[in-house]
Image 1 (spheres, helix red, strand yellow):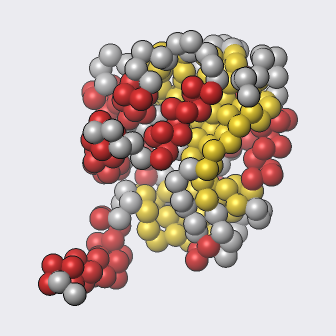
Image 2 (cartoon, one colour):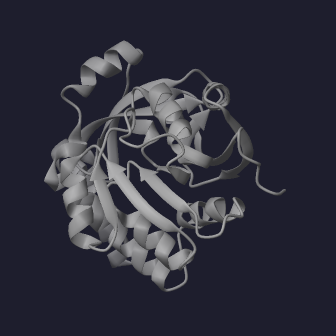
Length: 268
């Protein structure tokens, strides 16, 4: 083994062995399964790191290299899938609302992968996230808003895109209904962690901050969307996310395109 390779392996082992260090350097760490939604709600009062400016900075740093790779023509799978889901709607320059936009990086992803093909807006309930999004992408419309109580009339946007935030929304049933209400044509649930067992609630450290996370039972998730007036059009496998060592069940992430039943579905 080369000396440099050995040094890197030893450094990685040291980082993982010390809690305060691994939480600083690793994107996701220190998972713990919760007993159910009640414990998740209690835990969320002290485990909501998305409001901290430090979390915003760390998330942004984590995505910088991915965005640079995308600019060089090598987008990560989840970026490519997000663009494919929007294109699958067959809508010309649709209005897209991203719910849970974080620091707004998907506005840049869509601008690069679908240049001129959509009109993007973003909302997030974290003021720190929105402040950073507005500073970085000054020509894009961002607002502070709760996914479970969106401040828009019915049918306000052609597409509502939930990009990697549903897993952190404990009232996810309400968030799905609100997405369906505000969308006029389609809803996209992007990079959703799912498995074939009951919906599981966890805590973890994300970008060094404590948060609550959900692994959805796929069947339950699809039924909730159908009950909200949505019809599944297509699904994509997305980036790997197997938490079997923590939950006891294999999991992955998937992206779903739903049409609103009052609107025509996408062409096959």
